[in-house]
Image (cartoon, rainbow, N blue to C red; front, side, top):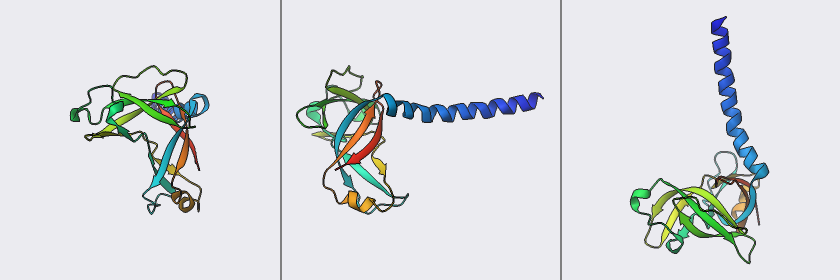
Length: 167
């Protein structure tokens, strides 16, 4: 009897853990702030795991003039927050990069990423939504586009869910 209850408890805990992971991203997709980023497909021949395209966002490579903190090579792998601002065009552009989460204004959003490397004039940030899976037989058409727009939903904590890409 005790063993059965123990086994049921372990199984229930695993199910709750899996549902919370999926539920977190579903919650962001339903309630997050909608933003659009400018992107372009890269690595056009790499279609192994079903069809997908690898996307390079303008917010992956950010000009060092937007870096508010004194980031160093030692900060590699640390979480950074990118403040995005929407101006005259429909997509958001990076306004600042910090180690602490800033408070966004009305036409702003914050996304959380990981600092990959620093160069003299640019920094590279990875977010986790650079790979986009597409319906079968549509990957080649998307790869031929020079400029794409990516629609995301961003939570208050800076986590984002990629909803779709369009051109």
